Structure formats: C-alpha cells, structure tokens
Amino acid sequence: MLGNKIFKTDNTKFIKTKLLAFIVFTTFLPLPASAITFVQNRTDLQSNDKIEWSSLGKVIDPFAPNPSTFLPPSFSATSTGGLGVNVNIPSAGGDITPPFIFQNNPPVQTNFGAGDFLLFTGFSPTIIPTGNPNPLTIVFDKNVKAAGTQIAASGSANLDYEVFVSAFDDANNLLGTFSLPGISSGARDNSAVFLGVKSDTANIRSLVFSTSSPQRGFGINTVSIATVSEPYSDFGLLILGTLGLGLQGYKLAHHKLNN
Image (cartoon, rainbow, N blue to C red; front, side, top):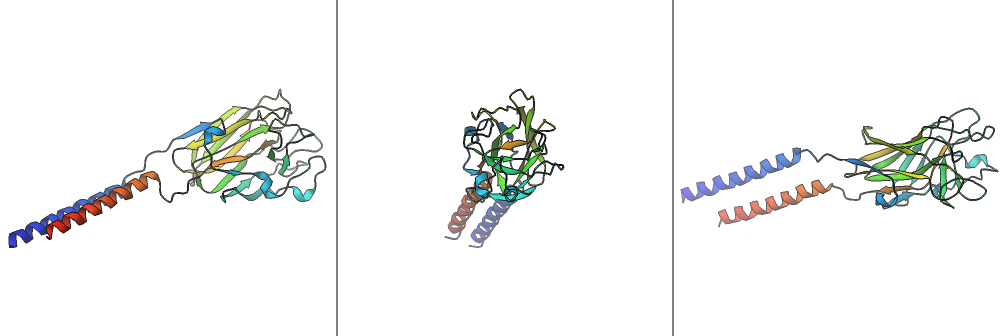
C-alpha cells in the first residue's frame, strides 16, 4: 500500500511539474514577428470601420468660408464603429487657412470621387494654389490592423510629386514608410491615389500622410480601418486553449491515480 501511495504521489508531482513548465514556456515565448505591407486599393484593405469627415459637423464652403467651420490644428473624431482618433496638422502660418472639411462638388475641382467629403490641410486665399504642406497625423485610440485613404495635393494635372504614408506602433516605433507618385486634377473621377498599410497583427497606432510638394496643401477622403475586437491575439487564444487541455489532462490523470 505504501508503495502505491509513493507511486501516486510521484506521478502527481511529475504531472504538476510538466504543467508548470508548460505555463512558464508559453508565458515567455516570444510572439510571432509582425509584417507590414503596402496597400494601394481600398478593397484590399478589408476594412470594417471608417472615418467620415462629415461626421465632425463642420463642412465649409470654400468660396464663402465661415470662420467658425475651420478646424484647429489638433482635433478629435470618432469612426462609425466608435473608435476615437486624434488628428494633428501643424499650422503653416502666414495667410494660410487652418484645416477644413469640404465636399467635392461643383464648382470645386479635385480628382476625388464626386460627393466625397475631404479633409484639407489649408490653403492661401491670396496665392492660389499655395497651401499647408505639413504632414497630417492620425492617432488611433487603440491599435488597428490596417488603415488607409485616398490623397491628392492641390494643383493641376501636370504637378509632379510623391505622396507618402508612414505607420507607427504604440511606442512610436516606425513600422514602415511607403510612397506613390501623386495624381492631381479637377476631373472628379476618383483617380486620387490610395495609400494604406496592413499588418498581420493589430500593432498600428498612428499614420502620417505627407507629400513632396513644398508649397501645396493636400486633402484626404474617408479613412478606411480594419479593427479587431478580440481581447487576445490568435496566438494568445491558442496558448489559452492548449493550457485548458493541459489542465483537463492533469485532472483526469489525478482522478485515475486516486481511484
């Protein structure tokens, strides 16, 4: 009888030791490295949320602007899914206006889609098409998997410039920077290029949009976003599931040893 008790006790300790080792191993196991990719098409972003600039309730008439509809250099917005964002557009100074939102309808001339609501960095009413060339930064309240928008600088179709997007994580580490040749015209044909980024994990906290044009303002339309609602990553769920199986196995083994 004593030998059986020793055998049962030793096996129970062995199972507990293996389970503890598994917990320690999975707790400190590094998560898989994430990869960020450039997305040039809104459909490929596979978004489930978006920021509509008209939701701010401040849409300006560019030809008869009301000062109360201009935006401050930094402001907040909320996506249709309830995600909070902060937007920052440093002031250009001089006679260049603050940022504002307008709708792409006649007699406005842009190459976004007809009816799009655009967030514009600002322009000079005296030296057209001079505008605010400073970067536009969007910071999400929580990490997202993907985000992007269409972008174009003010000017004619023969304007030669590049557009850029940079993505950062929640520690402000650069995840990647991508660029495309910009396209500007007044055709209202939805030809403004799309700049987006996509990651295999939800690690994108902010995006910075800019252009290479040193004296032109630029605009963006709806920002498409891919968010995640799970409290844990897929890898974390795998660990929890495996741990659950391990605990179940331990209970079965413990039951057999004591019967």
